[in-house]
Length: 314
Image (cartoon, rainbow, N blue to C red):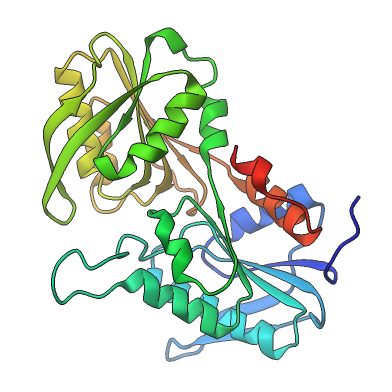
């Protein structure tokens, strides 16, 4: 084993997704660090380290998933706690990075909240961030610290490995996701279909064109986030009308807000596959959750030991 370039490896978690943190620790054959994260009577966040982290290599597992502001603030306070406790190195492991969709000024007089969130994490004292399938790759440039941008593509490739490649197409639900879908299609030896979509308002989608042939084929709609499932179910209905035989969907981050599960249950989608980047919930028979814990554990181990992470994202 390569000699560690840091102090001892320590894994900690907030309240956002402790089950994922425990799975990561299981893969690494280590125990979760002792950290108290609670609330004062007035709702303020109370954090206290219950063990020494001086000079150790510390990883804080905390997706900024709903409730986004609560979990983001927890992360910031935890980072500050570790900094003031003289941790050797602090890495924020944020499997789901909230506010990522606000990555540019899409209209006048709006914020770029992804940049603000990046600044807050950096200023709090994180020295590195590890995240999974950012909504937009350029968000890496919002940080003034190293970013390990991991891909969940491998867990989906394993899931769909036994599908007939001769009758398979991967569908990008919008033009912005074409690169993501193209790479997945290439690894699946499948065709690529692109949806020309417009958003008249947030969480509402209208399909204008389907670029490519889905008739008689098994389709996998491949995306990074499924929120209210409006886009997903609209795209599924469109390609069904164009003759798709079976329709699956795969999305790294299953927010599934509002009536998303009901929409999926009533849609043409046979199965939606998501990951445990967000807490696992019982979402009914059409939604299946795969774990990315081994992927994150491998990345943490490699980073701790000064090894390349390139092989993880192949």
